[in-house]
Length: 233
Image (cartoon, rainbow, N blue to C red; front, side, top):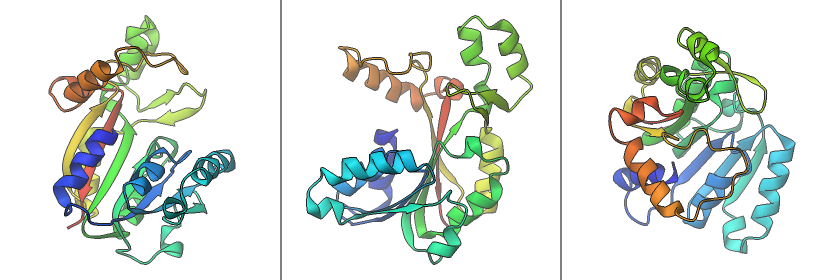
């Protein structure tokens, strides 16, 4: 996903441009810290205090110049209009959040308002068109059959979550003036890898295969996750 995001940023902004980035649901700050290291100013929004503590711990180990480029706000991301003026950011990330939001449209509309004209909205969502893949490949035939007719699922954390379909999100992005510019699949081949598994010795080859599959039909259509990139009109 980082490769995909970098590709979209490089295609939209001038080389060396210092971007204003909003990362909603930043988790432990993986993307926020990576982008700050690249020279961008990042505001991270997260509601899980444990995640915030982990992000602050990693940030504290960075040089002062990088620490100064990161701001962290405790919030669930639905009150961006309280914290920021419309058009305040060049890039808005919302990765792994929509699956926990019952009605994502208001959140998405709020995020789109935060974008400056020409700004990039990056979403990472569970692929509702491929919900049967994980249970099917695991031999859970009842679960696979049920997944064909549902947008709901139980994730690896044991939490009930929801998936989004590409056509629905495409229509939503158009309606909020941030139409879909590009989309990718994420975790095409590796979705069944156990949590906490050690990276394999051939990690570079694995990433190359995932990257190629994530941008190639029909493989990207059955990925566990979808990475959608919209551009503000």
